[in-house]
Image 1 (tube, rainbow, N blue to C red):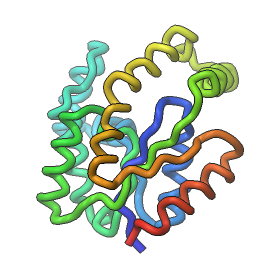
Image 2 (tube, rainbow, N blue to C red):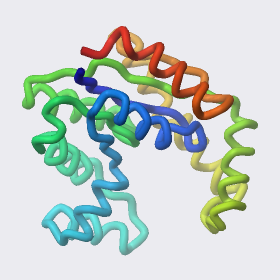
Image 3 (cartoon, rainbow, N blue to C red):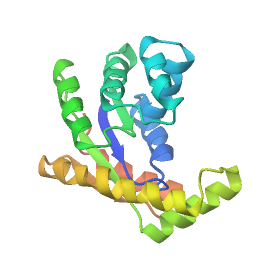
Image 4 (cartoon, helix red, strand yellow):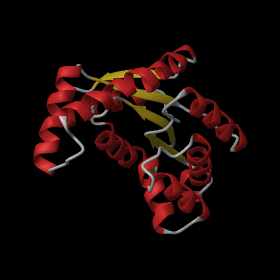
Amino acid sequence: MSARLVIMGPQGSGKGTQALRLAERFGVPTISTGDIFRANIKGSTALGLLAQSYTAKGDLVPDSVTNDMVKDRLAQPDAAGGFILDGYPRNAAQVTALDAILADLDTRLDAVAELVADRDELLARLARRAEIEGREDDTELAIARRLDIYDEQTAPLTSAYDARGLLVRVDGTGDIDEVTARLVAALDPVVR
């Protein structure tokens, strides 16, 4: 079985956890832009050094660098049979870039899964995570801002994918196993 998926959802929706579970279910790698950045920086690749030149100054890595990293990662042999993109695309320009990358690889997405949850639930989850993990960057103000950024930049992408008939919305609340079961039930009919 192969699966070519994007998993989307605001911070705290559980997309990272669910992406790993789906990857295991479908036998494909999870491709997280954060992991790609870290691997390229650790490996001192040309793209990693370029990304680090931005992150070291506290700047966001430009889309062009992110797109090149994703293109490189999707061209690796383990992604030939499928993949789950987590954290990409994040904006309309990246959607366009992903379309071009997939066209170059002569493949397409099977589905885009969006985990949805009430904002109060997300805030509560993120506050718990900050407490458990001791994450200093997870202040109430920072969390609210990241959720606002998602609403402004990433959430509108779901409309574009819905118009293409690719969007599958899944309730991200409840027990982790329950969410996984809902995702699998929604995605099994559309993966090849």
